[in-house]
Length: 488
Ligand SMILES: *Cc1c(COP(=O)(O)O)cnc(C)c1O
Image 1 (cartoon, rainbow, N blue to C red):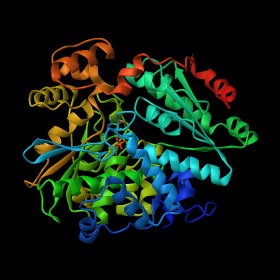
Image 2 (cartoon, helix red, strand yellow):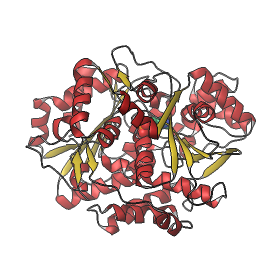
Image 3 (cartoon, rainbow, N blue to C red):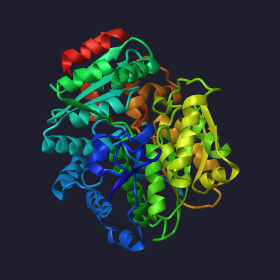
C-alpha cells in the first residue's frame, strides 16, 4: 500500500511513498498530508472471523490487510503495548449507559486519555524504523494537556528518538503537568513556556521554520518528525477501535451482524472521527458519525452549513480543553477523500490566505451523508456529568459533549456507541464542580469525587503527586531555542 498527497504532487517530492516514509516525514507537497491510496475491506466475512478475537488479533489482521511496509514481528511488538492497559484481556471496554447507548472507553492506557490508543504502538514503530535506518529523530510537541504526556510516555527511553515537549506554564491541569514534568528519561525534555497555549504553539512553529534551527539540527545529524495527528501512523491505529466497538455490540447482543449503529465522537483535530470515517468507508456498518464539539464549534458549522470561517472566531477556553481547537487538521483528509486533491488544495489555500472557505451545496450534502454535528457548552456538560453520576457512571467533560449529540442527532432509533476520550481523573476539578463541590486543586478534587461517587483513582494518577519533579525549566518564549540546543 502506497500513500499519496491531499494537495497533489509538486514534482519535487515523490508522487507516492511507503507507510514508513509517510510516518517518518509526514509533510507532503504544498503543505498537504499523506493518505492511503486505497482502504482494505471490512466485510461481513472479516467481522465474522473476528467475532471472538482479542483486540490485538483483530488489530494485527487489519494492519496486515493494509499492506504496510512494517515487519509482522514489529507490528506484533507494537500491539503488545496494549498489554500495559488496565485489563490486557480487554484494553477497550464498553459500558452501557442507556438501553441503546454504550460508552467505548478509550482511556485505559498509561496516561488516561485516548491519545495512548494510537501513540503507544506508533511510538514503538517509529523508534524501530529509526534504529533500522540508523537515523536520529527529534519530535517536538506543543501541548495543552493530553498529547504531551502520551508522547513522552510512548517514547520514554526509546532509541534514536528524542522528544521535546512545550507546555504553557499554568495552562494545564495539575495532573497533566505532573505527567510531563515527572517523566524521567535521557531522551526527553519538557519545557514550561510563559504564555498561553497559542503563544507556545506559535513559538514552536517559528522555531521549526527557522533556517538557523534547521541547520543546527542538520549539523547534529538529527531529522524532524511529528507525532500529532497529521501523522498517518496515528490514524491507522484509530480505525481499529471502531471495528472493535462494533464487534462488542454484536457480542453483547445489541445488534445482529450487519446491522447499523451510530458512532458519537468528541472532536478536535478530527483524528478520531477520521478513523471512524475510514472504517465506515471500508465497510463497517455505520449509519452516521455524529460529531460533538464544545463552544469552539467550528466543526458544527463545517458539517451543518459547509462553512469554515476562522475570521469571526477567537479560541475560547473551555472545560474540555483537548477540544479547544479552531484549525482542525484532519478535515483535510475527509475533503480530499470526497472532493479530490485539486479542490482540497484550493480550499486549504483559501483557509490560509483568507481565513475561511465555503463548500458548495452539493459538497455540503456529501459531507452530511456521513456526518451530523452538534455542540455543548460547559454548563450543559456539567449537567450531563451530574445526570450520569446519579445513574452511577462518571464521565469526563469531553465525553459529556457526546450526550447531546446522542439525544438530538439520531434520525433512526439505532444503537449507539459514544467514545470516552479521557478518564475523569484527568479533569477532576470540573467533575467535582459538576457534582456540586467546587475545589481548587486536583488532589482535593480527586479525593472528593472518589469518596462521593464510589469510583477509584488509578495508581499512576495517585503516584504522580509523590514522584520527583525532574523537569523544572520554565522560560520566556525567546529562550526556548537555547534550551533546545542544550538538550540536543
Ligand atoms: C485529543 C482529544 C480529543 C480530540 O480528538 P481528535 O482526534 O483531535 O478529534 C478529545 N478528547 C480528548 C480527551 C482528547 O485528548
